[in-house]
Image (tube, rainbow, N blue to C red; front, side):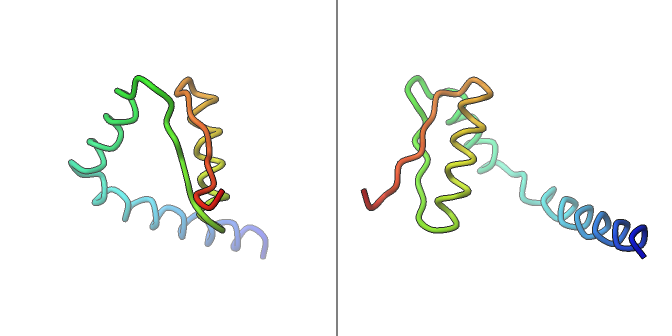
Length: 75
């Protein structure tokens, strides 16, 4: 049962990743280029669950060499 659940979970994740391929377009490239070309810090913001995700994104960017921080939009 565990093996089957693991395979099912991986198949769901594979399907989701395959659907993302169509979303890698010119807008995606422009967003990545804007971040890479940024001469100052990247500011990430969000409220609620988006805020938690934003904090993780800011931390990931900072840990990979892109100066960034999270700012709560209501503070």
